[in-house]
Length: 217
Image (cartoon, rainbow, N blue to C red):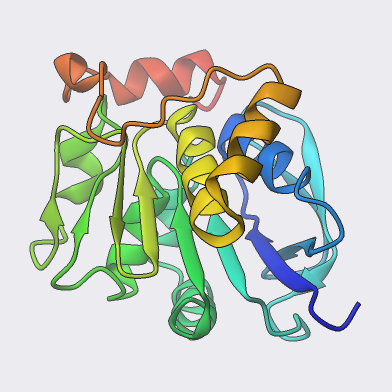
């Protein structure tokens, strides 16, 4: 359809499953107005931090122009924040997008790409400092479920990405649409971006313990 928009979900090794699929569940229920595609540095299966793989339909080289960009978090973001190919693609696609979204530690990738310079943003609370410490040009907000600054949305950890996604849907497709999707998916939408019950756990995460849990050590 002529007015159909495209959301590009960016994949990388060791992405967090719910960071990706929570938002895509919400966006996927918008209807034919929005098409979702998956993009990675190379096409094919991309393994998540939890194990299951997701197929990247397009590579950075052949991906079409997208209207919205979603980058999940996960342990893999620490490597991707140093990956020139990822940073170049995110910067190129993100600057042209109507909505650029990151979930959890995905904001660290946006920061390394320079897309958050001079902007407000947030990230995963348990590992907040580990994600944000090398991005001093960003106004990092510790107490926020998600943050909207211009066309860029950044969320706190994991499940917060689903709340953020509904806020993006409300902005671009209307509040009623977002509320209907929340009801249809039986999801209790935390629609107040400033209500973050996980700030109390700020920087209490143990990265080595998390990696051991995932079998990465």
